[in-house]
Length: 374
Image (cartoon, rainbow, N blue to C red; front, side):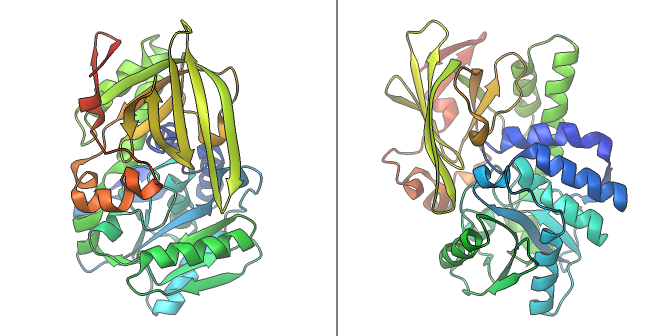
């Protein structure tokens, strides 16, 4: 059922989207402010359930592209994503009936809302990653047969570039990454144009609703002086994400982070509060693998989320700092992201990780707030 998203819901959505972003997807606070500005100047946004989208509707997803470390210093003015949409519409000779997120994490849950408010379009409650990933081909859209190109890339100086690589979405990513670097490390994009029937077949459904529900669950738990991680676990249990496992509790002792080739890459290390256990997370925009005392406890495509220990507020990769006290959780991804076809596109090997994928609920058993490793 369609619903209306207003400014008052954005703090909860931003928080939940940052959790689903598994450290990446861009700064949700910046995205929230851009949406607030667009709604204030135009109107609230209509959100469509994917089942309500006509099969022959024309949907163009929109997003921001680049390294999160750049995005926090090079803040968008708010018109770039709409420029990317208009450039692709012009190239294709057809106007979009709706837009949609390409990923449900961080800022990139917000960019389509900015476009929708400015263009008077609805947003489809679905996305192509079910989390955030660093590369454009890492989409369920691509896994299940929707080509990413032609796509458009828009910069802050009103420049636009159209890239058409046919069905080769990996080459599309490579070219778009180069364009984005030359636009200063951050750009806005429109890609994976598709029919409503393709949305239903290939998208991860209702992730905007999920982000809103997760953010609300954390806030309400705080207000009730309850455990926000338990609230997250309860909120997820009835969804296609199902499992939450606490992987580690401790503090940040080292962050190695660099911006290279259009990505934020690095490693963050933690020590337990008792000081006798260690966690290391490797990231490329998003968290990729969590290793506790030499043993893998969670890996892509499952979500690795670093939360403030007392509030469960999500911490992005660019926001990690020495001394932060955290709870690190793993969240299971939906089944359509765990198929052999999906793992061939965004499983561990696609990031150069020499580890097999095993579901987080098989790696870690949790009972009564304690972590038991299998």
